[in-house]
Image 1 (cartoon, rainbow, N blue to C red):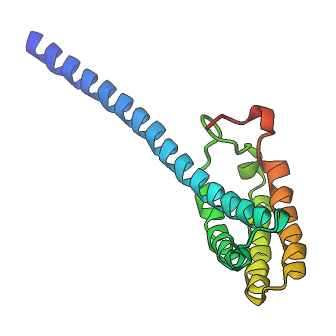
Image 2 (cartoon, rainbow, N blue to C red):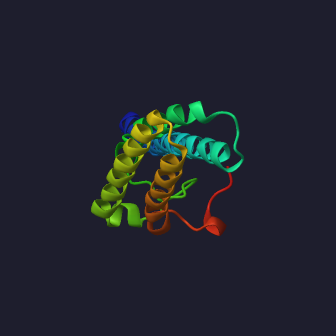
Length: 159
């Protein structure tokens, strides 16, 4: 009888350990997804910032705009996949509305892809006035998604 109780107790402890391990693994999995998602978005932001610096401060790197624009265009194709896993807790700036209104979010990501592809095309021609106008269109596409789907500045986590 005692041996049977020990076996049952060992089984229960093992099951509890497995549950705790899986819960911890889920949290780690979410952190990895968040980290990837944030890197995709930071990459886009860094390239937008680079273009902005070149245009605003008239830096002698006009030839770099095409590379930044191409990077934004390529990275924008990753947004929907990077946000497919619903993670609203922890170190995320994404609002739950991303998944509550997925179609609108996905449409915003597609608009960003379209506008960034246009910028990449325009940048290859080197027309600074046209580049500036398209950067504004691209910035609007970013903002149109950030406003409904990203937490306000005061609620964002500090990296």
